[in-house]
Amino acid sequence: MRDSLKFLCELPIYQEEQPYQLVGYADQEATPQGENCVFEAKEIDVQDAREHPVTLQTHGFAFFQFKSGCELAARHFETVGGDNSILTKYLDETVEFVRKMFKPVDIICFDWRLRRRDPTTGPGIPPRDLKDIRNYALPSGDVVHCDYSADGGFDRLKIQLLPDELAEYMKKGRKGMIVK
Image 1 (cartoon, rainbow, N blue to C red):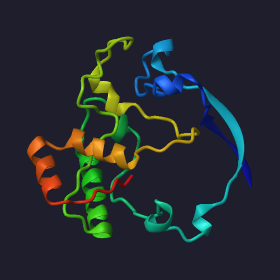
Image 2: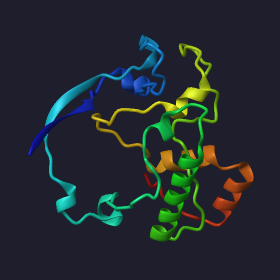
Image 3: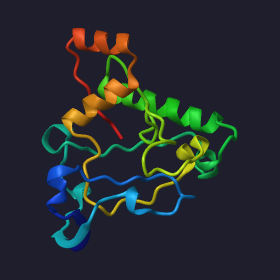
Image 4: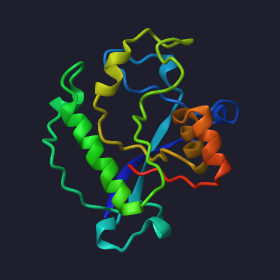
């Protein structure tokens, strides 16, 4: 089967400046400062990965089925300031599923849209309300990307862990895994 996906163009500007795209603020209009990415569509061969044996060790991803006991209606995940009991229960289920599958020493569940730095300020970034960031449903991706590299995964740990937790992690020589 053939399909078309968007790939980042190889532009000279990326030798001087990393590609970036600010996402997550539905009420803000796109501005030239909001991204410097230029994409091109390319036709690619696509295979249904569910029809082939894939593992984390051989392919870097795997499929798992998990039936949540929660009502997974959008209103429980996209409502600002509402009852978070369903979201909390869902996150607890997810953590328990990961614990059973991988038997980790520790689990950190994080919202990738939140940053330690203040995202409401900065050059070229319009002011915004932080309460909305977790509740903005992003469309499914059609741009080829890697959410976390080995370095990026470690950078995420440095953001999520307190300094003493990071020092303990480093001292014990632990390895990390990002599970989506």
